[in-house]
Image (cartoon, rainbow, N blue to C red; front, side):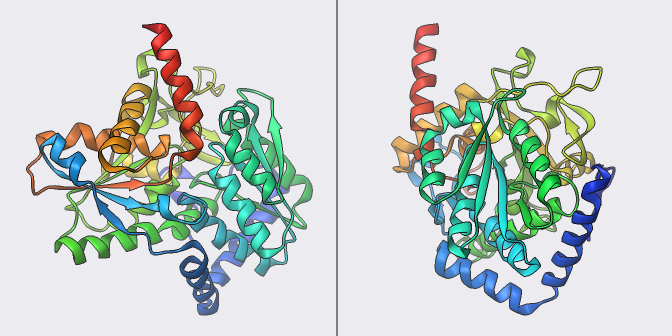
Length: 394
């Protein structure tokens, strides 16, 4: 099992968490060697989540841009509306296998919280979700969905009151209640074995997309593009192509108001090596090592660190990481709505914006595969508030 990715990763946690992590490691390794576990996981993904998700050629948008063809991997069509449910199904099955009776989770945009509450209801397990108070306000539809599914939502007011602080509170809960509680981490961050475990459960995205591109286009895409906060949807997509050197892997970080402004969430492009939530990673921090508050129009990308495997892929040059600002993401959100009749999540809109930038300079037979990691129902009020603020600024 991978505990490190080059110089990143590890288990930088309090001694009280080492035993639960070792227990989790052993359980995951056992499950990975059990064909019955894999069969049940795949059955639920098929019959409950609705996999496999299709790839969709964004024909009108591509024609408008006049360059490469943009292909969308449609994770927005999953039950709950995002990629997050792939991982929560796997972790809930693992929790049940370990005899854990209670699920907890952190969430930013709310989609991981909804996905955790969903599988908790499916398996008849109590669920509590920690969410930054700012995110509770800007993602209120998802808060109501979690409550409707039977979850208790804790609004975290400490620190920046966003995803980082929600994860802090979830970890505190786990330390206190690890005997009967399973912490369902939503991204490829945190202490080992979470980065590998989440990547493995999300790898269904890339495995499907690789086969679908070969079946539909007779070849692999030229570039595979995904947004990166903690980075689970990107690692899920990259997993299908990481051994194909002809496919450029492109992660897209949240540039917020621009790197120069200091108000962003671009950990790889704007951070330094540090330790956050039990893992050595690229981290937004002061010269004294204090974590810097992040900013993004997208709640799901508003995290000051990033998964250790992403850091390693950047180190080795296997993946490249660009930055998209708020205004570019909102413009891409509008473009997909109007050209394709698809309302994307603001997180996914960052990846789409990068594809929109790249497509015009590429030949018409080039393929840009974008992971549309979620749908944008949850973001409508946030987008309207952003546009209203932009008009006032003008």
